Image (tube, rainbow over all chains, first blue to last red; front, side, top):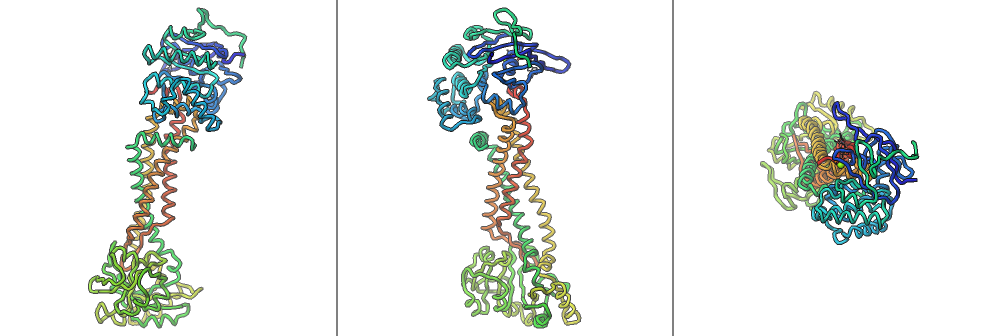
Length: 236
Length: 380
Ligand SMILES: Nc1ncnc2c1ncn2[C@@H]1O[C@H](COP(=O)(O)OP(=O)(O)OP(=O)(O)O)[C@@H](O)[C@H]1O
Ligand SMILES: [Mg+2]
């Protein structure tokens, strides 16, 4: 059984008279330990797909299974609980909470999970060490560089040991050196921590760091030049 | 919810100017709320307390200001013989200001034995002996003493009356602490010979079970054809009638109390709406991390409750301290209303702050909880 199964998912937006359908019957399976990159033209629906997998947006039709759960069936409250336990989200613009220190930002998702304070502290330490920011624990986001902020963002995404880490253009607003740092970090998260990653990017070099490269074209996913077709998939 | 309290405080601190302005606004409003409450409380205390219904005041018919009511002192012995009457005490009242005033001085002259029997005074300084020994001695309520900075041994002059302070007292009834008691004959003589043998009013204490209205009616009938006709009312009624103009005003001030609460509501709600609008994206990030919409709602409510309770709490504490320290009272026509701090008012203020904080957070909290995550994340 695959870790993530996206089954015949469509998503459309209405703006006035016009309806656009960036995802039109998308199929995708992600295995545990995959590092999947997703490219495509601007406006092709990459972020939309990623947000659906992350459970922060709703499909118009189709199903998304993560593990045993069909997340398209969950209500808003249940979906939030599910995200807390299963999703790590890395934003392009970091989106750290400005009034919290690096440490507190990383700790935040753990406060939603049943856990003792000492267990929480241990996990935060490990995540901070993984992104090599132990010495910045007490710093506020405004006191850090963009690259450091993004490392905190990654620590926050991995700290709860989620089922899937999603990253929407994680290097989109960083310079080349920092981009390199962040990509290596994500690669290590995948290889050394064994986490499953889905990363949207515009950068072909970045995409090469992943174990699988996908493209979104005309509402469908393409891998190795061939459209991804429905396999012997679960049906709802 | 307590887990995220530090986050709430940090968020408020981030916009500290805005938060402090809101807190101080809420504080001032609640201070006024407490003040208004204590004014009303003082009025209620006069008209509602036990004694107010169990004693009668006999006054000259159709007279209002104590200066104009004159009854023969010996009416008291006639009244004392009526059935249902336990005691009748003639009282001379003098005030330097018959109109409503924040600094009116009210003297009551009465026989020492009756004073000791019917007024539950606790002397804070001075002695009953000292009072009894001296003709011009006076027992001064602690509120007047504080206002006029009087202590035992001082001479104190108002108009053409000069008394020697022989004691300072506290009383069960806060309004009594705004009075000065003297000997009856001293006050009668002080205003010239014409007042000897005359008093302003007669206070009648009823036996248990006596019907106050029936006794009052019997007294008025007794003197109907006498040299001076009387009007007899329960003490509560008498005070309510005497203060009717003020009472109307105070009833109106009541709305000021509501207005204060409304003010805090709009103030805190405005700040909370601004805070939510500032953080549309932040709340979306929190939701992405797994915060339930309900928790976002709770965070917003917590924030508005903290603002309102901090401000309101400071206002209530400030109001209570001010009331305790100022010993303020208002008097009209010889009757005083004391403005005292009380737990009742403090509790009302605290509950109002809490309720207002909650109400103020409802709409913005709902808005924050309902926001669509992806739309909000695109927010600049
Ligand atoms: N909330 C929305 N309302 C209307 N249209 C939307 C909304 N969200 C996305 N779209 C449209 O859906 C399409 C796909 O958007 P999406 O953000 O997924 O593209 P993308 O591939 O991530 O683009 P980019 O590379 O520029 O980030 C775009 O045409 C976009 O304008
Ligand atoms: Mg995008």
